[in-house]
Length: 116
Image 1 (spheres, rainbow, N blue to C red):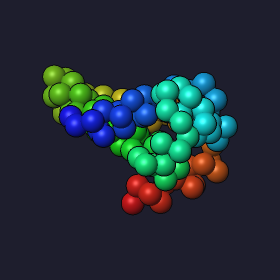
Image 2: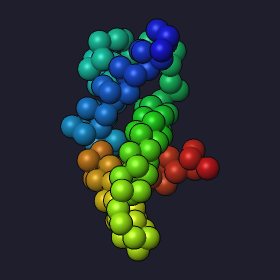
Image 3: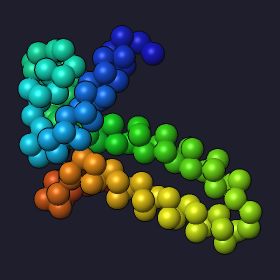
């Protein structure tokens, strides 16, 4: 991992702390910068806005979750148990992510197009 990737990782971790504490809408780039120990201007070198930070972190964390989930699913006996476990786990994960980061429908409408 190069220096830029390391800084982005630190920014992502700080952002998630802020999103958990204040929610996505109330978190500011200033909050994230303060938490990570950078100035707000430095964040613009890495990201356009907090939504871009959220999207990148959500994708990275989501992929990590999916990788782990797939391994866990294969350990279940029977196709029905595997399907049930997989679907229930994904639903619970995404529900928890949205609740933990206090993402409103308004925010979701704003960031969802970035995923497609």
